[in-house]
Image (cartoon, rainbow, N blue to C red; front, side):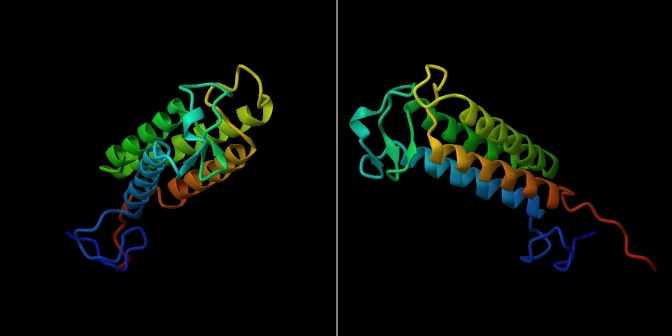
Length: 158
């Protein structure tokens, strides 16, 4: 039995398409992977020479806005790999989006509580990172929740 392209949780590409939650996890993972790579490219990351492994002393700024460090970039790469790996099943993709979104909301709160110059700001995070984390958290949870049925079907009434 195949899914029709009219099924609300399937992409319209046809019967071999993935549930939308899996595609969303793949796109989010690919974006995280790209951002992780871009964080290591001088020019895309300004003040690249001042990048530290971790800590608020890192002066490197992705796109000249988001404070990054080697650790921060590695976290983006790990989130990207996780998304691309967990997109294989609908349940894992939903878990990635909802769980990852919850992690980003916790990181948003952490960033608001911890001062920019605090030694506890080890990732490092600045105000732009904080608000991006809020958007990522809400967006990922919304995607996982709204698309999270994983394309489960119910037979239409006869």
